[in-house]
Each structure stands twice: as structure tokens, then as C-alpha cells.
Length: 345
Image (cartoon, rainbow, N blue to C red):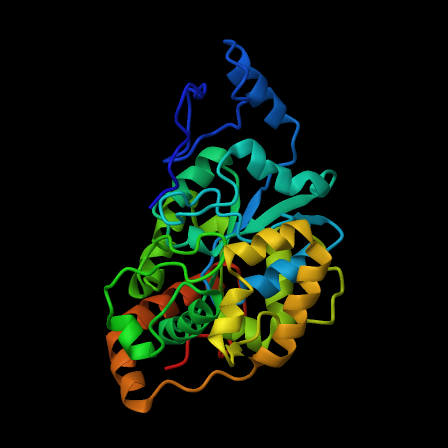
């Protein structure tokens, strides 16, 4: 569900993006010129011209990190600002345009400016909102075998406190509402798409291609990115019209994490602790780091149970065929040599 809009006597701008305010107005400035001043204030601010729109668990964190080190690229200070996904992200850090654009203060003077928010891909409103913001924006989409995404996403949600059903198969089948178990929104509904809705990639890609055209959409498979990260990275730079920075190091980012004991893990993300973190940031950072050393393990995710894997493969067989067709057309469009970079059967 979208975040609720501010009420009261605040002035409202005359033009908004779907379900979200377009400008950050001063609530104490009730003159007729307030919207114009707020609009003028955003004109001089650096603005993104390319977007990594998803999907989750497909390598977007790594690509965001690599691009942020390129000398001609300015990436948003925060990954996942989610500004244009008001319809699918209930709790957005940046709900006004002016606040959102502060993410790019350090990008002034860069040839290209970008951000990465994985919920943009599954958001029906995001493509239109991004187009209204910047019609010439370029879109980067990263996809992966839907079954692998589901499994990885369930593991991440358990770690992040947005999932309480420990068993993967039961979590996929469950329609019960999820509530945040930790963090600043503890006790509030998580909202957003279901697991299966998140991996309808062919439909989601079609929305972006329809709105932006093939020329402005660049599709990468996770398999391509994992096997040949340098080639995939150079392909993104070419898509953005940038020269290579000769990068040779492509470290693995966002590895799978398993929590040994959930109770202390969630205590560190309880609102009380988060309040202490604001008052004593260094002490809180050291306390959390010390706990994570003994309580959080980076390890390979266990494989999906064989029978469940077969059933899910059958369920998503048609989706994988559609994705492979989209990937092949994308490679033909950008004249990429054919390699074994499709989603595995």
C-alpha cells in the first residue's frame, strides 16, 4: 500500500506522480508562490538519467557498487530509494521529489547519474512515473531463474524481518499478511507484491519496453553477470555511452546470510535499539558488529528440496521460455555474441 499522504493545511502541488507528492513544500509557507519556489529549487539539483529497476536477488547491489566507482558516474547515495514505487512500497524513505533529489547532491558534474531500486520492476506505476520524470531515461533490468529468485528472496526476508514463515514451501503458499518483525516499522504491515507476483518478469519487462522502447532498455541475466561480470559490466557502460574504466576487480556482493539466533538479531533492530543508535551511533555500530560476528554466518544457501524444485520448475517453465526469448532479442539488438547466458533449464 502507498504511504499515506500528509494531511492538514499543507499546500499541495498542482501536478503529482501517481500516489505521491511531487514536491517537498515548506508547511509554514502558505503563499501562492510556494509551489513555484519549490519547483525552481529542484531545477538546479542533479537528477538521475538511468535506473536499475530490478529484479531483487539478481545482482543489482553488485552492479550499483561497480558503477558507483566509475569516474564518470554518480550513483544515488542510498540504494533502494524507491521514490517511484509508491504503489508497491509502503514505507519509503524518500516520499517527496526534493528529498529524493538530495540523494544526488554528490553527483554534480558527472556524465551520467543513476540509482537502483529493485521494486520498480514489479511496480505498475513506476515506468510511467519515471517516464514523466525523464522521458529519455535509460532502464537497466537484471533477471534470473524465477525459482532461484524466490528461494533467495525468502532467505533475505527472513534475515531482514519481513517474513515469519520459516519453511520456504509454506511461505510461498501462505496468503497470511506479513508484519515487520524488526526495524523502525516493527508491527506494521509489510505490504507489496506476493512472492509469485514479484517474479512475473516477462510481463514487467514488457511494461518498460512499451513505455521506453527497446533502445532505452538493457536486459541482463544473472547467469551472464555471475559468469562474465566484466563483459556484463562493459556492456552496461556501452549502453550508457561511457568509456571503460578498465575495472578488473568484481567482488561478490550481498552474499547469503544465515542468522543463528533470531531473538538477539531482532533485538538489534528493535525501535528501542534504533533510538539508542541515533543517540550513540558509534556504540551501537560496535555492538551490532560484535553480535553479527558470532550470530550471522555467510554461507551457501541450501538447495531447494528436490520434489519442490521439480514442481516449481514446471510452474515457471513458460515464464523461463519467455525470459529466454526476451534475452535473445536483447542480445541480437545490441549485437552481443551468443553464449550460454540464458536461464538454465
